[in-house]
Length: 537
Image (cartoon, rainbow, N blue to C red; front, side, top):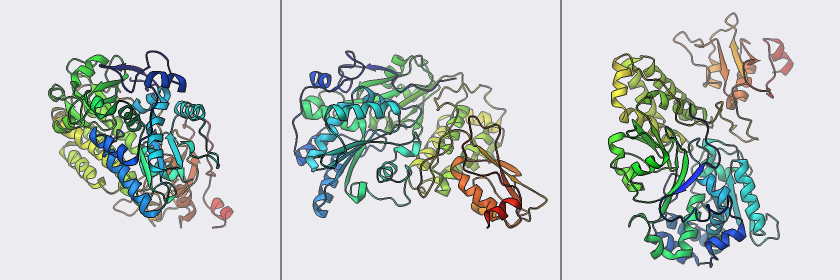
């Protein structure tokens, strides 16, 4: 069973280091050591900075891969047009269990990230800089880095800079989630999709990109586009940071020039010589098979061409000895749990997709496969963020990459291989924590409540299914199809509302005595009748 990755795993480099310069000298480059290793950095004008980003073809390294120069120019134009000062946001929210590259940079080279962010802030005339993080280690390192530079959030500061700490959640890393949390709301996406370049933090134009992107910009600003372009491919120059885990002897974060063969990266981490498949781009990424691995090189265009994805920079091989569908099921279940719980296609569709994968493994046959395909298709482009799209892409890629295993499960008695759990997940499992509409995010962990149907009282009104579709579905007879079920944490408030509004008083909530850890639920234990009269509703 693969253990959770540490915040700072082993770090290696192929060729000459750029982002990881100085890592062989100290564990963390404070400001004096940072300046010794990288040297001073001169400010640049806005258009000069945009031209630099364009010449090195700098794209966002957080997954979406948007051209940085377009973001920069869009923010500048919007700020000038509206006559307001823009905001710069560094997204260091790295919340996939298999991703650690940005966490490593924040923990070990925070000033390189700040260099890039401060370059942009000065070029744009920004007076606010926010660094979003989700881990205690990254919060400590970045707050120390701001203090080393004399930056703070004081009202009289020329540049107000601070760290925004959010829960470790898949949806927290979405740009809209981070912006919403900076404005004081929950770290979940709002219902409307608005470009941060036009209206971000406090409604101001906001330049938001991930930690590695700003660090790459700082390197290029120091050495110039020509020297930067001497490393890597002509059309994708420079280096990339990758997190390599899964079925490997040495999980690591590695800096490599673009153009390095993917198989060489896998060899450095001790992957199987002939992996059954490699998940590229993380849990919103795509699988490629063993034959394709030999063709792929480390670059966005190359991985896209062979059906893979650079994505969030996670590379995860699995061996020939494990069931790929079973491994993917574990990830699908985790992705379902990571829903913010506010978009139906996501918080209903992703659990249904995970159940579909489970049905295939349980011998559901061709019908189960078709059901899974339909669910994956239906969740796309229907959420407030990219979580349902990325999750659906992962499921569709699984079906496409492992056709032999799929046939063995759909048409036969299975592949006969165990599920080894080689794809890292957070220990203990986590339920969604965001509460739509505001409020503080709740703690993570297993469900704390169970909801029960008293069949002697139930009259099939169906209101429970309308209020709490995560738990209740109605059968052909109009009655709930379950008598008891665990309540997801994000749905606890809705569960209480369902109990209160049941016309027949047929629902009750009780503590789940098997839940791990101390329960601190704000849900009272309600019995029929008495609970409703006590609430006065």
